[in-house]
Length: 159
Image (cartoon, helix red, strand yellow):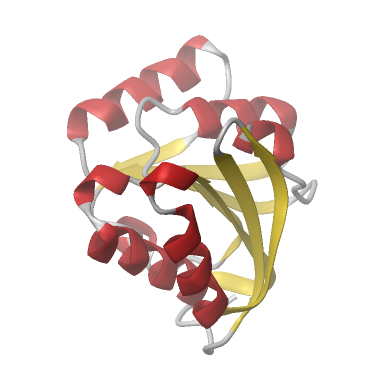
């Protein structure tokens, strides 16, 4: 549902934050070949699978292992998407949201999918503290997709 909801620019930089095996990154790289697509995950095996899936699908994805945005902290992203690791706990998830807000270009957007029973309500409240605009763009079967724009804080990255 997140992939289907994404409205991305034709060019720029996209990050799949917490990429797992790369479903979002690979789909975005296929649909938006002029976007520079990045992916990051704390799990090295997941990053290896993301790289393999990108290669098998004939797309370019720059994937790295690391905590949150750390491997790409010097990059401004035009779009970031995440299906956050809710089992890691709210502190981890909310920290990822804050990192994303700090690493968006001036007109950048963060896209988040959350299940209601896994904390979509508190996630939305946190996103509303981090962004001036938080819109629910889709919901189905207990899942909610949020589009977040205009971070409340000044970006930590240089465009």
